[in-house]
Length: 416
Image (cartoon, rainbow, N blue to C red; front, side, top):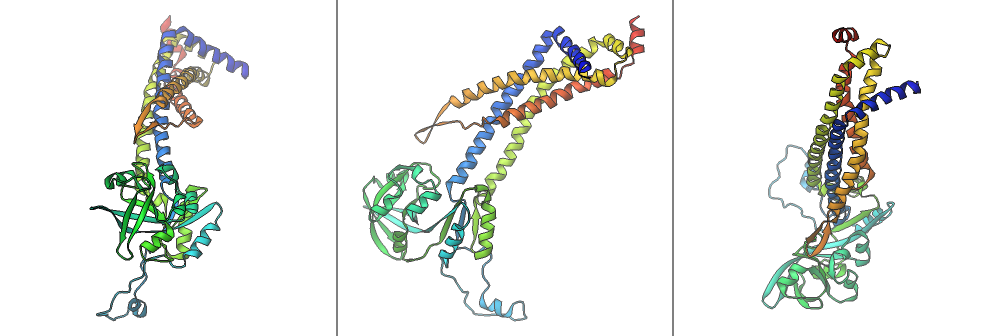
């Protein structure tokens, strides 16, 4: 069996070696298709992975807030339900904002394997310097815990998150806001809230421009400082949770929300629109790069079709001496697979070179030099190879199927 297969393979190689120009054109087509497939898919998948990584790192994986997806019913509704009673003139019960029994939620979250929970309080103040006023959304945090669940320290141009603990009245703001107020590190500004009056705050950190965590109108202070400024002692209204496995965020959020009732959002829920756009983007990307490989396979179809046309008399002789239809299909399909394999090898080298060129390009973003994120994993090479081999096999099988069904008598009689 092995000897017969080797003999058939030798015939296929002999056919390709006799048609060197067409073989080179077909191999070049596959190589270019595979090379650009690798470059485009590495660029698109790499940028997508980088975008998802930024989504995951931009905020805690799960955020529990002092909101309820389904508001609790009013006393009148609980008492009478759907009865034939109409209520007039009653006041709607309003709840004091803040997470009740938040220590229990923190304990439950920290007991989960690989989970770290951090409490925080958000609110609004007004920063004043001279005659200039700027609104600011402050986030009160525990620096030691917050540093474990967020990447704030990496986003700071100057200062550190832990400086909030060592400097009385410390505050971290964005560079854009600092520029508008004409302040710098160590300067003092006045912070006014609607409940606790005015107090002095010292700039201990400046966030880089264009950061999602610290925008031009938000800043960080110590948790107890925020509670004092906002007149809400011992109250928090947000718990951030970071997980070892970010993709378990939806399950963890659902479990905590079911247990405690407060709204728990995973990063997937907060970014649902962006993730749905990525799915559409992937469909478009793989459609385009698959079209590239499909076009490249036409070269293989042409080579095998011409080989079938030129070798009609040889085909008839092989059939007349006992070769089956399967043997003939094997010969011509192997021609296509060989062309595809050689093209894939050269395509891998071309794709690697294109990725090196793309990876070496520098872009200045926000004053920092950035490189194009690329996915260089073996998975991309495997996808390109498998897709090329499938396309090449199908392109070769179509004329091979036609060749195997010819009638040797008609061909030999016509040749006499």
